[in-house]
Image (cartoon, rainbow, N blue to C red; front, side):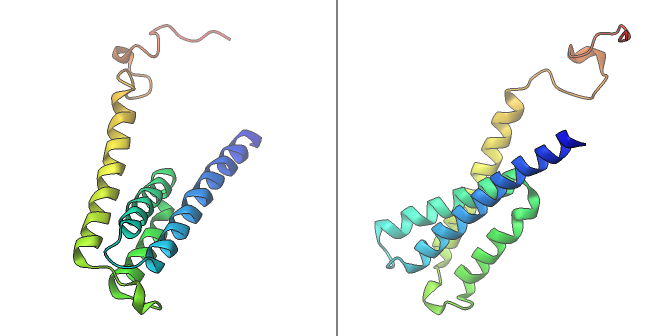
Length: 130
């Protein structure tokens, strides 16, 4: 039981890091002047940090949703509205990064498959002796 709890703590600390980072970059994005290099930089950083949060745990999907809601509709911060182009680029960056990270993860593990499947080379066909 102690091992499981330590795993949850490690996952939640990474999750909180990426959620905090994405919110920090989003606030900096909303405060940046339109059409500047600074705005595009924070747009990319916000998308990548939100991707990191979702990659750790899907329950973090609320954070990018709130950021998108504020950015697209200007909810609570009317000056924070992003253009359609900026929203589309952020979504493309986030989706591409998420897909690329998972592709690389599964590509790096060619011999994984169903547990107990003898053809993948991970488990021997012999029973484990105690």
